[in-house]
Length: 105
Length: 114
Image (cartoon, rainbow over all chains, first blue to last red; front, top):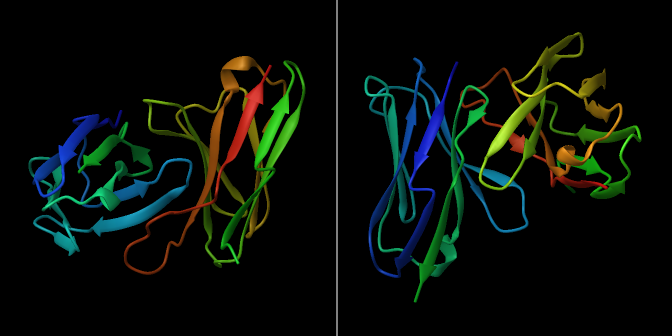
C-alpha cells in the first residue's frame, strides 16, 4: 500500500528564514505533486514533478524530486507572511497529511 | 466562473439520512475524484472515475457511493449518514491528456452529521 509521509507537520518560522519540507513515499513513482491550501479554502496546484531530478521553482518556493530515494523536498527561501498555508504533497492520488506553515514577522 | 463547482457548500443533516453531494466541471477533463479532508489526516480518496463508464473505489469507500452522470458530473452519496462522516469533501478533476495531469479542486462541501 502506498504511503506518503510529510514532515514536519507543523512549521513556524520567521520572515526571512529558509526551511525545507520533506515528502517521502513508499512505492515507485516518477510523478509527484505539491499543492497549497489557504485556511478555509480549496487546494491549488503548485508544482508537478515528472521525473527523477526534476526541479521546479516559483518565487520563494523550489521543489525537487529524487525518485530513487522516493523523496521530494519543498524549499522555502526568505519566507514571507504570504507563504503561510498548508502544503500537501501527493503521489498517485494519495496525499500526505500536510505541513501547516506559519510565517511570523 | 469557477471551473469545478460543488453543491451544496454546507450541509447539516441527521444520522440515518441519505444525502447527495454534487460536482460539476467545465474544464473538459475526463477524470474526476472525491476526497474527504479531516484535520491532521490530509485528503483521503473515496472514489474516482477515469471516464463515464469507469468507477473505482478509493481507500475509504465504505458508506459511500457515486454516480458519473456525464463527463462533467460526478455525484457522491451517503446512503445512511453517520456522525463520523462529518468532514470537508472535495471534488477534483484532471485530464488524462497533457503533461502534468495535476488535479483541480472544487471549493469543497462542509458536511455535518448530527
